[in-house]
Image 1 (cartoon, rainbow, N blue to C red):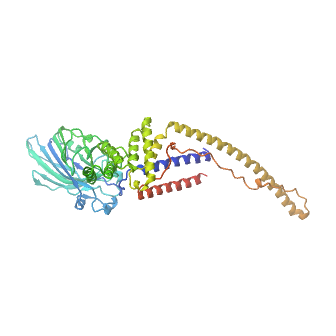
Image 2: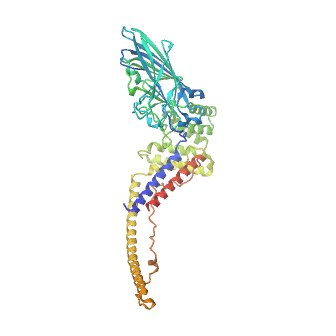
Image 3: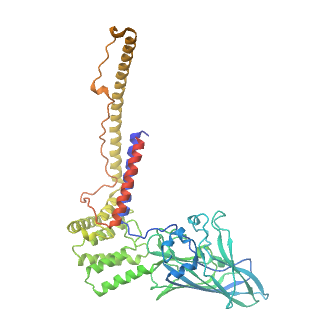
Amino acid sequence: MDKIHLRLCFRQVISFFLLCFLFTLLISTPVRADVGIQPILPGGSNIKPGEETPIQMAAEVVVMNVRQATEADNASIKLNPKWYGYDQRDVWFTCIAEVEADFTMKNPTSDTLSMTVWFPLASALENVNWRTNLPGEIAPRIESFKVSVDGNPVDFTASELPNPKGFEYTPLPWASFKVTFPGNKDTLIHVSYLVPLQPSAKGFTMALYYIFQTGAGWAGPIGKAELILNLPYPASMETLAGMSNSLRLPPMYLPKAGKLPFGMTMEGNQARLTWKGFEPGPEDDFAIWLLQPDKWQEIAAARAAVQANPQDGKAWLQLAFVYHSLSLTRTNTRMVFSDQFLDPCIQAYRKAAILLPDHPVPHAALGLFALEPHLAKQNAPADVLQYVQNELQVARDLEARDPSLTEGAIITSEGLANALNYYLYNSATEIAYLGTVAAYKVTETVRATLEYATRTVWAIDHATYLAVWATNMNCWATAGADCTATPIPTLTPTQTLMPKPTRTPTLLPSRVPTPTVITAKTAGNETNQIIITAAGVLALLLAGFAASKRLR
């Protein structure tokens, strides 16, 4: 590939990447910044037999009381806070769960049996991404574990066992304790501990998980298993969401919500699951997304403000912002955590548009919500596209009257324009663009051919000039000034210096064309958003310039 073509391709890639970068920054939801390397926090788990045994788990009842974490709860988990950036926080985790688990163990034989029972103090899942741990770091572990047998506290031993991911990964701690099971009797094992909820790296969600598969080592299925969640807010489709994929921890940057576990019942602040004849495998491990309590408090406060004054347009707009902030998608419109917020969000924007006729943000948001379902397949009907363009024009006109109204807004006319441009970049646009590129290549080929011919003529003339000069110099060295030499040819001005090619290449169209009804306009984003965007653009331009220079 010639350098001209290579530079062209490079410019295309940089331009397209820069556009995508700006698009992402301009219309993404503000999210919390990452803090260090996310630790793999321990979760709840069943007890595990240390050997093959006839002992059965007749029943288990696990109660997980979720509450806001306090500074004292930091002592419930052992880790190095500096390695994860937690040393800058008074409270390491948003929420913590107080776990109380009762296991009714049945000895169906007439013999008294004694054995070692094990409990994982750190996550023992094979699908955990242990590579996120730093070399030499211990696995974050439960420090608050307590166990009793038939109401009597017993001591336990903490041991480091090999990581199921491989010997090169962090060893995992287990608690072990001796239990004697009298023949033909039930034995009650009670464990209690605190587990922090695993926060997502971005967004307003946290994961609560419980490992059932460690209980599969007991004889036969688990007779009956109950899992009870007591939450700091109402248990509903707005505050709980299932995990769409198998549990993978961490970093969970963009958690995707799925359906709630089958059979879950919710009443008040409690969610409950029950299994009978339960033979748990890895696919039966429980994991669920929870909304962070402070976000629920935002929702409750915004709803209360609207109820108190239904004609307050600013209250409706704030409620829409709160709903909108739960979005984690690129286009900032689909409620990933819970679809329950999607329709209320649109209705809140519509109400705000009526009560605040001079405010541009509701129009930009409504246009974006109308376009988003069609972005992937580019199948928006003509009336939808017309509606989006109309809302865009209204938003731009209102922004021009009072740009301050977009300060701190989740979406502006510029964000909607970028989304529309993204949608309009289709196969026909690509064909036209490639045609222009092909024409540009032909032009560059002709130009290069002419330059080559010019340089060849110049090289011949220059070689003749140097040869005559050398002859004269030799003559003068032997005969002095009376030497009759071959006249030195006079170089024309165009031959004196290497001709510089005139480079005014045909301008290529932008990778994402702008529709005729749209003109560019700067949106009033937050100050820090502008700084981040400017820094990113400057870095990309500098990198592109440096790379282009190297290609020359």
